[in-house]
Image 1 (spheres, one colour):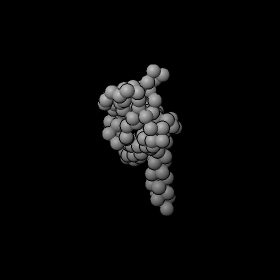
Image 2: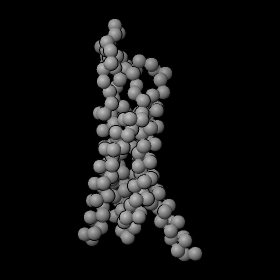
Image 3: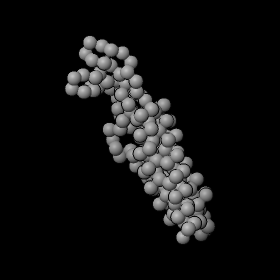
Image 4: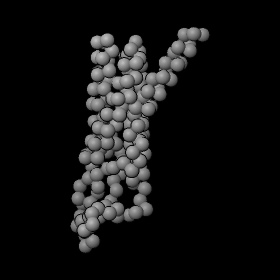
Amino acid sequence: MRHHLATLVMTVLVLALLGVAAGFAWSGLAPSSLYVLTDVGPQVADPESQSLIDADGWFAVVTGGFGLVCGVAAYVLARRRPVAALLGLAGGGLLAGYIAFLVGRSAKGTVQAAGPGGVTGTASLGLTAHGVLFAWPVLATAIFWAVEFVVTYRQRS
């Protein structure tokens, strides 16, 4: 039981640390949205801009890629304890995705210039489609099971 718990905790901790790296990667890849700060609060400078959608897409790509790599690594390193590894991938993937969101959101954004309609600046990254927070754990556990299926199928043949 102690080994299973250690596998679970270690998986969650490693994924949480990788969440920091994913946050910086997302911050570097995703475009910023230009906002104008007015009396009523920040308003998107160009409402037809695709940068909000791009930020969601880049978050899904970055965290999904990390999830795929983590799923394969977890299978290779902890396949003797699959339940603990899967629980660690699911819980750690959720935590890592949230950490990536927090780090990426705070890593980007500075005021650039002042204008007559308000102060123009780049806003911190944000997510409009919160479902992308599930990309990491879903892909990590899916690839773990896919590799398990392929390996056990070959062993039966």
